[in-house]
Image (cartoon, rainbow, N blue to C red; front, top):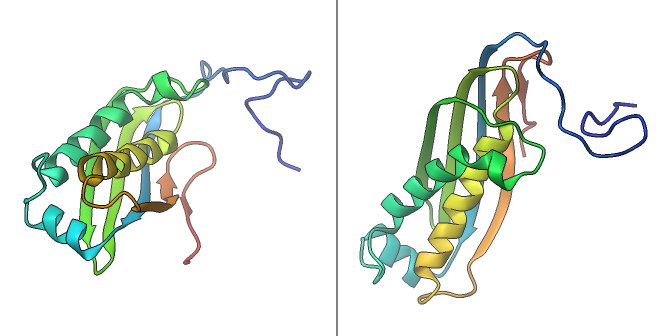
Length: 158
């Protein structure tokens, strides 16, 4: 069985010591979606939401969130991110957010990519909730990661 690295031998939570690890190029890609009414989707796509440019604000919120992940997730290390990108794609029922995070470091950037996606989707909800309070955020997950001791990983097709 795989041992959880954030638990010590006594079962207490702790921050993993990455001091002896060598820095490597690391990348993680995460995704998630928000579904909504056609009215809300149209307002966001057309830039007609009363709170302003939902897409631009959500993208910036996601990037900012990735940079603050270690302040939000207790056992995450602060990382010098070299890139964070958030892409938004519209479909018939909602918006899919995809975030990419990169660093040259001693630990991975999966949490940064997942945090970026989550906050991006929450920002969309916040900015459009006056139109549709029943929006649903779902399918937040890691798509791929590369670098580090465990190497590359890609999510199985869903």
